Amino acid sequence: MGVKIDAMVIVPLVLAAAVVGAGFWLYTPDQPRAALEAKYLAAPGDYLDVAGLRLHLRDSGPKDAPAVILLHGFGASLHTWEPWARGLSSDHRVIRFDLPGFGLTGADPSGDYTDERTVQVLGALMDRLGLPRASLVGNSIGGKIAWNFAACHPDRVDRLVLISPDGFASPGIEYGKKAEVPAMVRLMRYALPAFMVRQSLAPAYGDLTVLTEELAVRYRDLMLAPGVRDAMIARLEQVMLEDPEPLLRQIRAPTLLLWGEKDAMIPVTNAADYLRDLPDAKLVTFPDLGHVPQEEAPERTLAVVRQFLAA
Image 1: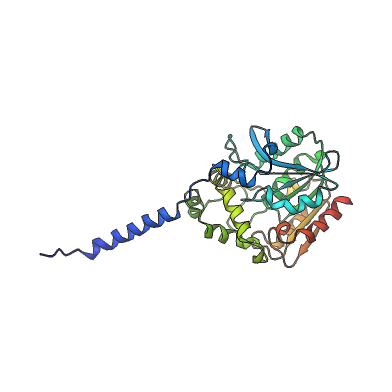
Image 2: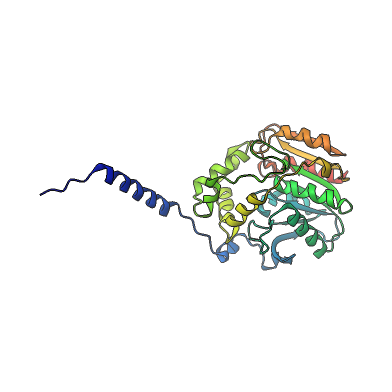
């Protein structure tokens, strides 16, 4: 005798099995630190203990030359600056490091990913390296850290370069209120397939041909460093925007704003807010570039920065 199976029973079971199967397929474990270091650590000496962290950094150029510190954006690493670091190292001391919670620096044992903590780490790094002053260059959240530091420590900043910096309110992000982290973002701690990383990176580029397979792999690899995904989510959870105007007006360093007009992450229209509030700032835009001009057109954009640093 045959057994009749009710479709009301079998369909949910099939769907559940499909979801479980998809979960196993998408599940993305952390990559072993040793494997990542073999690919992305240039030398064992590129670690430095600072403020309770083991920072991954590179320090190039003459040690007695004017210092420039490069601060990357969310989800990035010190590698985003590679062409600029080579171009500046002939006559500058160039310091770049993986910010707390990113790359080979990894998670901050304190669990604190606020701007105040990152500003503290930057100051401690300058102290550790014996730098009373430096010029700061920051992209996206790195720009926000740079201008916060310049406002809080105006006597320690020579010049300031802000590349599509974060900091002003935008749709969904209000002053004095913590941003809600979408469930899909939280899921990245369990699943981070390559296609998802590429999709999240695409809006950062005005020219998608720059987003090569090698570049996308590097971004994904370093997001898969142990503890980094949890740290990235924690940083987003801890964001509490305050009106930047009072701090920006405290900045004394001459400031260069660089912006790609094809930036789909932080629009070039935000530059007007910075020009209004910064005491000494000028803006240079690039019609064909996006959120990371240092990656898209390093020679062209660095020429503008070199001219500004030499002024």
